[in-house]
Length: 142
Image 1 (cartoon, rainbow, N blue to C red):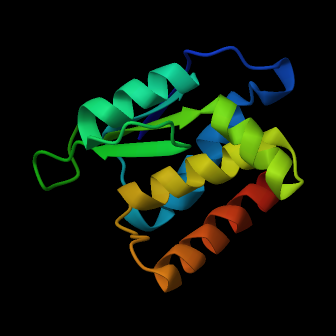
Image 2: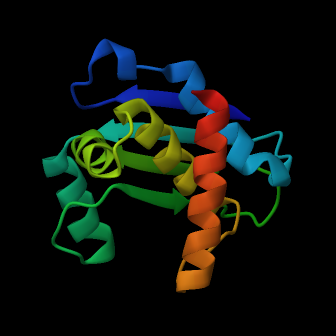
């Protein structure tokens, strides 16, 4: 599978970790063993994320990560999906959680990829399990 990373928002050099972002997505998607398709990881600003959230999910606020799957064929064919990550929100959450921004970015990318792999976080129990899995992936890469 081809994984692309696009930086549409300013990031410090230490957070431009393209290979680690790709590795986080691959680790989260591992269960799919998908050989074809394309995954785009797009790093956006708060303003961009708010616009995306409002336009596609009808939520008028900035969020940390949004995933969109594009599996039109129902098979292992192109295209696959996009993960939008808000660096401003990640930086804010990293301060609150008392860890680095890179760790938070890796966690959010893994979280978005887990959604694309079919995981759900619509209950407290599922959210806790999904967050633990995303953090486990981030720890392996930092």
